[in-house]
Amino acid sequence: MDKSKAFTDWVKRSLVEGNVDGARQNVTITVMDRAKKPVKRIHLSNAWASGWDGPSLEAGANDPATETVTLAYEDIKVESV
Figure: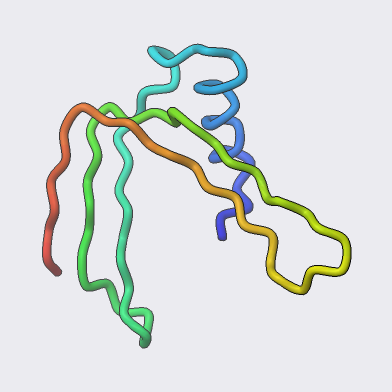
């Protein structure tokens, strides 16, 4: 989970303010194994947040609250580490 204010501001700039051009960033997602060793890197060029689904909060539910951010991008490169 990323609790970074910079990430939250980036998503807000894309979705709430509708400033997609100002929000485009190069993004790298690192996939880790169980020992937290990087096994794959996914590089997204000119990415922006194109969707957000908030958690569904139900009274009495024991499930964790999950948020989902959908990213759009112009180019992708996958690198095995």
